[in-house]
Image (cartoon, rainbow, N blue to C red; front, side, top):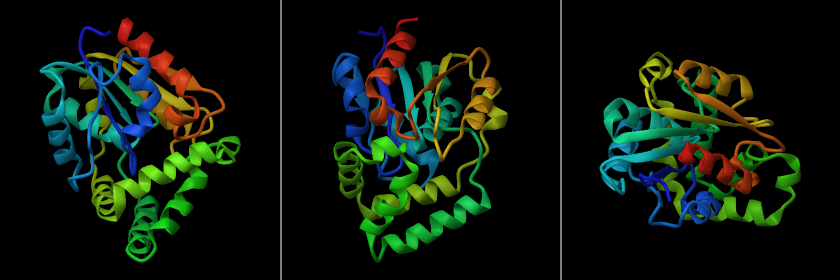
Length: 232
């Protein structure tokens, strides 16, 4: 068990199931706690929500995708509370106009046909072999439906309005691990490399045969990476 507990931050339309393997493999829910990031529509407030849910005064912090945006905001709000940082399938850039336009179309669709939104998102989330796995796709769908339309709209508004975090990366002083999926269609390797290079002393790990959902696509490998990061 790590000296400090681990706070895990899920991504868009994700819940604790996104980290099921990691929680189990890293000591259970007393050692690894998954925050609820569904109740606010700004990254700043999601960070405050996560800090209120933190299992201890000081903790290790890992965020996936949108959870990574929240983790970077926590590093601005309360860096003294974070003993080490892991950023999975995420980056420090703001939303692009093209990405915002796609999000706005999906938000409009969600109010009419939320299952259609999930179907539209799925092809970009995993590599083809994993998209053919009904267990993986079923878990993604269940998480999204459980999160629901209202939370999806809040999360998308938060993501659209996020700031450019690149100027703040040099201020991060704790041990940092960046995890990239080799075939991540949403967050290509080069922007994960940019993230790792911007943080002093950060290490970059590339997960093979993996798209955007590394914790679900290659759960054992991600758990091993996090275990080694916690042990160093």
